[in-house]
Length: 148
Image (cartoon, rainbow, N blue to C red; front, side, top):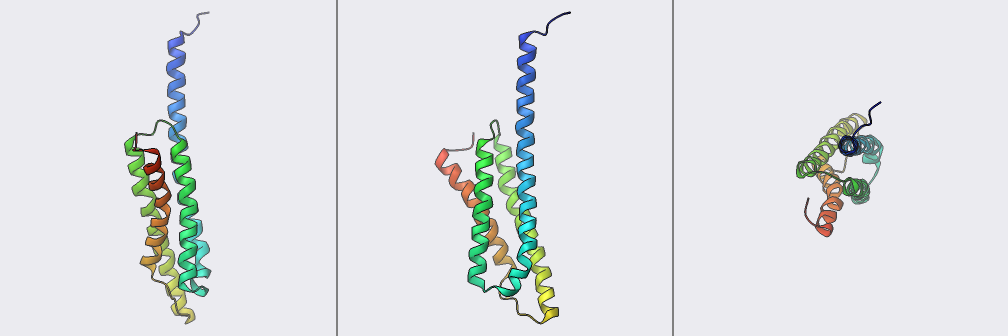
């Protein structure tokens, strides 16, 4: 029985490690997209009953919370290249904006049917959440240095 050379084992371990890091990256993005969708659905009743200022504060709080988790996870994944960071910066806010716009538009139609005034702008709410979502990531990049 012949033993596997050390170089082959090292190459396999490096490949497995890189593959695991990429899986972790995509799972992180998927988890945050699902979290954003859940936040969007949970906001429906709140959009109908809350005043605008507390609602925007809640959107900022949720965005910064999820954004902090995202920044922490992305920072700790080794071996990410520039295109991973660019994709994350474009993908997550875009999905967040689209999800919130759809949910708020649906809520607006429901408010019209129920004759309840909707006191929040869908575009402003979506942009508020998306901005709050990426701020922790940008701050982390500024503090830790440029993308490697």
